[in-house]
Length: 494
Image 1 (cartoon, rainbow, N blue to C red):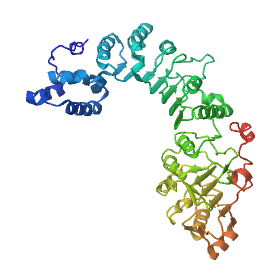
Image 2: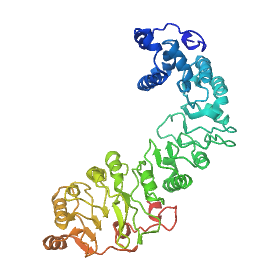
Image 3: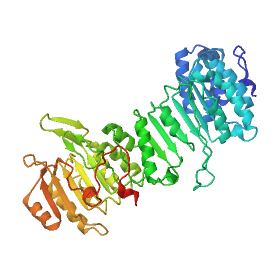
């Protein structure tokens, strides 16, 4: 063990060859010894967090050997000694060092990381030594990460957590060994980890599970806000089971705002049903990457007197759709701006004008889109509509429901441009739903006559029932589900 790491708290500072310390010691001694504690902590934290991983792990030792004043300050700052990392091939020295650190940390929240290196040789012996050191302090764990360790070690570690409580634990990350083959079939006997079975982790809000069954974690820790699941068998389960699994996750975690599902194999999920408040639903959708999803159907319900035939996505999802292209297989999309009731003059939702700058990028990532609906979207003139003439080459149906600040002539130009563009399908149907007294979209006779001769085109009042003709209902034969979970019969045979 490095001598500088085993000094008792009362030992005078020893010389070190660290460049940072050498530079600091070159300054007048009285300047260092007279630095107030709050100035010391500001300097220390700025230097600590801006360095590399090695610099950060060694920084408490470095700071404590500058001078007697700084040593006293460092020893009085428990958070300096509260990050423990076990990723050494021979962890004995780290265990001895962290035994001293834990005494100095006092009651500071602990961040603990266990990597794969200690388990290349005498793995069980090392695992037991590490757990003997950290278990007495489990009540002060803030984050606990175990990554890429053998399954037998994962079982040993998490078996020790079955009967204890971690009241301060906020982040739990467990990552199994990587699969040897990309298309490796999951074994029938899966390693199940069940921490805190007879204990509690009431403040756990962020969970990552990679390579292990997730069901226990989802049902046990229902206050989760962030959940990440990776390579846990979605690709082998089939579409129906995938839908049930996601619905179980969403139903079990009412506080969830970020769900990240990541598989190296493309997920086979082809249909996703979500019945949650709009804000929660959009937050979940913005964190998903489901390239096989083809459309979104709502549960049968009313919203301000309107039955919905297709799940609406908020305009604030456009930046995500533009940057990540997470739903590249969509055939139908309904973008909703805001809802207004004439009786109460009630405006609900976000207009999303700034988000429309991402419309072209979002539509560029939807090469298979057949139907596009804008529901109460304010276009602020032609600048946002122009991209409809150069994106979505397979688009057949275009619908505007109580949209504003655009004209019928602008829409006609888009229709004509798509007909002339090589490799693009011509629009088959154009529907504008608005009240005659409102005239959200300005109608002029010349454009109106041209459109009537060119495609199936109609302007009509908004439809308030499930009989609205949409691409999903007319061509795909789909209707909103009467149940919260399930799979549309058409999908099960595809």
